Length: 354
Image 1 (cartoon, helix red, strand yellow):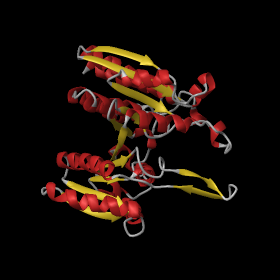
Image 2 (spheres, rainbow, N blue to C red):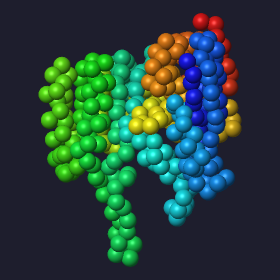
Image 3 (spheres, one colour):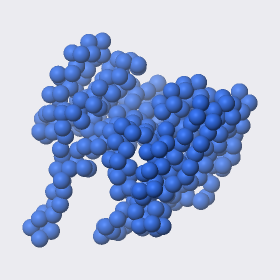
Image 4 (spheres, rainbow, N blue to C red):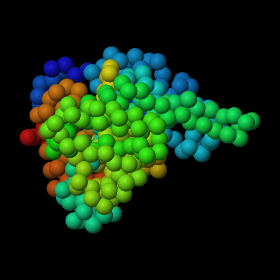
C-alpha cells in the first residue's frame, strides 16, 4: 500500500518526537511492504520566523495532497509572553483545523499499569480507566465573532454552533460508542447557555436512532468533577470546542504522564495525528522528551487514516514492551532513564524483530 504522509514537526520538542515516530513508521513500512512517501513542512513559530505565516500556503497544499498528517507541536514562549503579538503560532493550528475541516479531536484516555503510581489519583480510582474524549474543533467560541468596543475597555467572544456541526460530531460519538462499551456522555452547560441548549436538543433528537447505546447528559462542571471522582464511569464523552479543550487536558493528567497520550483530529479532507502534550520548550534540543505519545499517534494514523489495524497493533505492542522493559525517558522512568532518540531506536528495532 502507498502511504503518503505530510510531516509537520513544528516548535519546541516537535522535531525530536516526530523523528522518533518516523523511525517506527519506516520500520513498519519495511516490515509490511508498504511504499512510503513523506515530506516535511513548516508550521507554528518556526514558520512565522521563516515566512511570516504560522500555516503557510505551501504547508496547506502538502497536507491537502497527503493521506495523513503527522504533527509535532506548536508554541513558543516568545509569543506567550507578548500579548500584543498580532501573529501567533496558535493561529496556525486554528487555520489548519479550519482549512482541513478538522471537525473532531479524538483523545483516548487510558491508564498504564506501569504508571499508576504516578497518577495524582489513588490507584483504585484510575486502575482500568479507559475512555475517549471527542471534542468538536471547528465551531464555538474559538471561531465565533470576537472583538473590542467602548474604546477597547469591553471585549467579547461569541459562542456559535449550527445544528449541522452538532449532528456531525454526535454521529461520530455514537459510532465510537458502538465500537466500545456502548455509552455516550454528552457534556454541555444547557442550564445557562443557549448554544448548549441546542446541543442537548439535537442530542435528544438523535439518541433514539441508537437504541443500543446509553446516552447520558452532563453539565460541564459536573463532568469536570466526575472525571476526578469516577473516571472509570466514562466510555465516550462528546462536547463542544472550549469545554473539550479544558476537559481533555484534565483527563490526560490522571494517566500519570502527558507524554503517553496520542490524539487524532478527524478531517473532511486530511486527518492530523499528534501528541497532546504541546511544545515543551524547556526540553527542546535536550533529547529528554518522551516520544511515546507521538509514536502512539502514528499508531492511530495507521488504524484510522490507512485502515491498517495490524500495523497499529505492532506499534502498541512495541510501546508496551518498551515500558515493560523500563526502556523509557526520565519522566516515567523508575530505574535508568534513556534519551528520546534511544527510546525511538528501541521501539523501531522491536518492530523490525517481531
